[in-house]
Length: 216
Image (cartoon, rainbow, N blue to C red; front, side, top):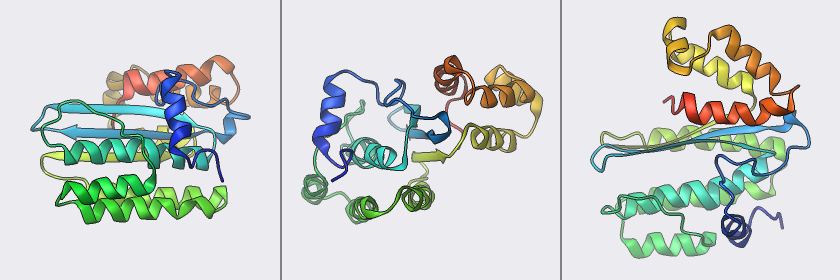
């Protein structure tokens, strides 16, 4: 069984006080293997905006993060309507399904379908797994874009995908420069440096978290 398909693996990572978003979670064998994820929880009524970027070394580590960290965090928050803080319920797939059933949430069916779907991806090869994760994120985002709250995940296979997304989302280059503190040319150069400069690997993720935030 893949080590990432185990709640105890993720519990151990958290106990070692590793930040699963901002830290260099797992050493990249090659920067070209990097997969980026942007996770968002927004609740206008509870005045909560949580946004993070992270970099993972392959599709299965990303899948583990989504299935055992982000989605349980997001669903636990939605179910517990009085919570102001975000918590990560470390538990198995079946335990999370049971928790959703016991909660009586009106969103229970949608939540269980999402978790069951993610759980089928472990038998896929890395390429197929990443394709399925991308498809899943699109459906997930559409389902959870609501009037008062938003759950969102963005999946990017390279730094250049992130840059292209930013450039096409933020229409005017002057607005982009003001927003992230970089010109379009500087942003593209930084994307290139991620693959050639050791320091740029860490500083790029820091840029994402500190300057870019969520683009929905």
